[in-house]
Image (cartoon, rainbow, N blue to C red; front, side, top):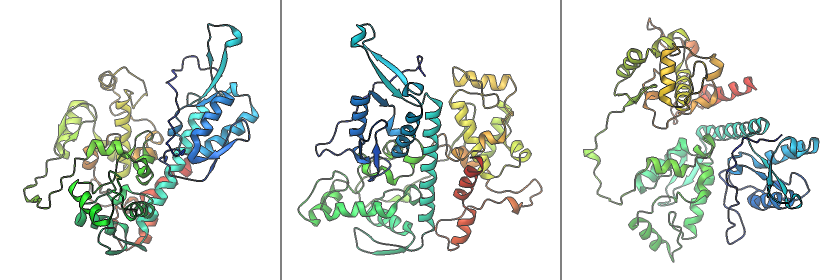
Length: 433
């Protein structure tokens, strides 16, 4: 199956560190084996670059975008089985080297990439499976009331919920690794950090010092009471690395964070909150209240979210998915009503309005999907304006369709397990597969 019209990006292998081991992957270290697609050669997952080099030199095959494959061992096993059934040329793009030279000097290399629908579907399934596993783990940690850990800075003990320790370190020691809901595999994360401190290593610049006092003074004076965003050892502890392929927490942090200032006399009394501006779905107009942004979209573009909510009986999380779906379609210059693709966002909006597709939604199964729980734009304040109640026009609450939002520190953990959004996400996934 030749993909003559595909664009091949430059392919290269990352350099090996001096100790001969590969850098930690976002998926975390593991002892799983990677098996060659064509022969018995195998290596541990952490040495995947050795096997990729083997595939290139011995079998003339390159796997595109390896870092975006959620579960490389399962990916390799799948294609090993498929290559036993059919020849490699049935699946891979063929790249001929020295094509203008003598035939005897020409060589065929094979590119396995997601241009092939089967490969793309496999990658998506592996990513979905990994996401479900991580969300299950995160939910289990939220449910866990048996958490017990000692603060690495003052030796105070914390039990109950992980948030008590994380909030304590941020509040009392100006050390924050992020909101508890952004963290997964929290105990392993804390153990990793503790091991570095036990080895007298700064958590940010990772230099080693002669004693704990010197290390403490260094981290305070240099404002190094944070972790190093360039150390990808931490990637596997942040949920964002599993939600959006190709985007690490380092990139998110660089977009949102500001340099920490080591000033013990900071006074927050003059802090003022700025109004949150919600951006229109169709243009750059911003409004500071729910009524203003809804009125603008209705009058300027003919889009009535209140009407859709009533007609389709949309609950809160369905509204979230619908908004994220429309955002993503318009961002990709595609009409959400008829799926026609355009050259620009402006052309797309003109088409949507001119052809009367503003209130034309595709079948609910198209947008009521788990991936649209996650915002298209990280700072989409429009999501904050959505109604979080299920009251009908008469003010009566429809209890049969309530989707409770439960605080992290509740004591009724059984209710959380039965009604959590994660459970619904996994149920939807199971029913659609």
